[in-house]
Length: 310
Image 1 (cartoon, rainbow, N blue to C red):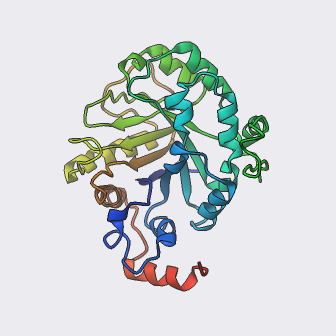
Image 2: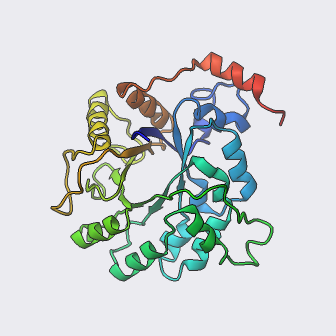
């Protein structure tokens, strides 16, 4: 399949969007259906805070277009609380919780590390070796779930063997180590290119057969929107990465991967000022020639007519 650029937002349930991004007449239960017709992907944030249930993943799958893609954020219990130590069972619980119900719409799994977490080579190696590279391996892992905790809330079936991509977002300078880049490349895991208003490092090493970008704000973390000029620059970067090239920016390692076309996933997370993320995402889409086929009035009418009763 040809490479694609997927542009979306981190999360979709924000009260400030109602009546502005979402029409006032739109029921809250249709918000994902609405945003999924304006852009091709979103990050699921709820999985970071707690385990979801299989029926929730099924609803997300059913409510979005056939070619829609979900990025799934890995649990903070694994990254922030356990700090990757002794996490086989929690990882099994995560994959047993219903992720397989996303079927072909399952995109990358995002693993975000806390700012205090330092590069611990042994733990990174163990975690990378534990992460399933496809849904068959994930199913095998999921069978090792905590039976008591996951009773009545597990999904242990896959519809097909599909690859699973993993991306790592770092926030501590100790990760600026060429050895970390080598480990990611050995496991085809992406180093997230994260714009954090210069609070944390933003290395741009390409480490996998895909690229993962998170835009948290370029002037003020989680708040500032992106200027037209800034979005032009990001559009050029995304095109370069999609074509297999290397863009501007700081890198950790001096070596580069062979040039090849890559999928690029880009998510706006400047959501403390809640209206910026979807506006910036749609502006960047237009700069890349990804025009939305819907007007707001047409989309609202279609959803209200076709949505099943609550």
